Length: 148
Image 1 (cartoon, rainbow, N blue to C red):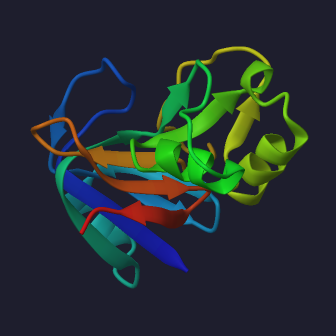
Image 2 (cartoon, rainbow, N blue to C red):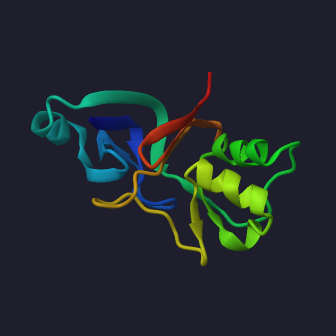
């Protein structure tokens, strides 16, 4: 199923220009297209549309130890609540923690790579509000966190 994610502003990368009226088209776990909302809405009229408040951009890379929590699953979920969709492998040395990250479909990287929104890339997205709080996290095309 095609899903069009849009927000008031879109950034293709963490420090990139904020683009108004843009969207990300997702099919399965991949980004099909990134571009102006009007163009994508017209070209993919049957796509489900998810409109989010705030700024839509790539998911975040976590480059430190995972936050403390009672269980590995809760440690991973703490990251998802902040918009993290990737973590460095060096911080997943505990097999239970590594398994929880893999079950959560977090991208496990051996080296830090700046996340970007690009066609054919993995559909890892995050929406942050004006206060910086994460409103939505999408990992491999699935919504895994939504702030109430």
